[in-house]
Amino acid sequence: MRITVDLDLCESHGSCVFAAPEIFSFDDDDFLLYEATPDEGLREVAEKAAASCPVRAITVAAAP
Image (cartoon, rainbow, N blue to C red; front, side, top):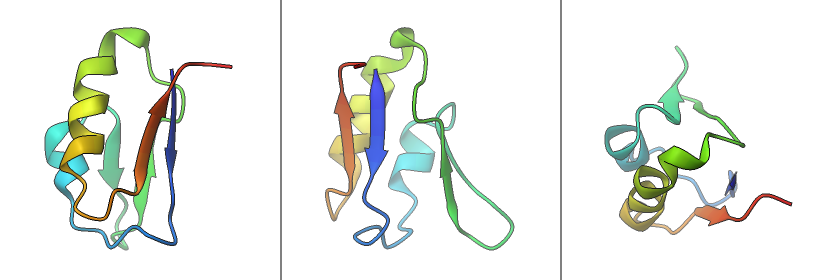
């Protein structure tokens, strides 16, 4: 699986961090950090995180 975040759209609401802390986090400056290629077993939480994003900045796709 591949996760992409459009950082131009991201407004740091943090819903992804709450929905999938195994994948998303903030650094000390509140900049979003994320695992671009998490384990396939995390697909459900990744999709929940993408759905929770109020600006739809997160895309979850099959690994290339």
